[in-house]
Length: 125
Image 1: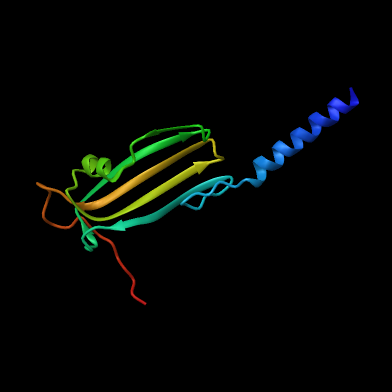
Image 2: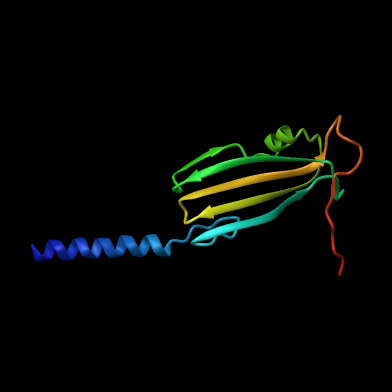
């Protein structure tokens, strides 16, 4: 009986060590407790001006279920953007229990006011 309990304790320790030491490589920096970051993705036509913003989001529950469409195409459709200036992404994660991944597209759309609604300021060194 003692041998069986010792084997179970050893197995539990091995499984715990494998779980803790097998880090998951991700393309974004994730904090253990909380993450809220915005990262660049790409630049479209090189303009830093925009008059429309489109967002698309997917969600993650417990690291087991992920649903949604966070594609650039979905973000363009949601914001009625047809000429992309640049794309960024926002990642939020709470204890690995709930997370969101949002793609944000900045650009121009048909029928929009021709004046620029926003301009991203780039600081030159």
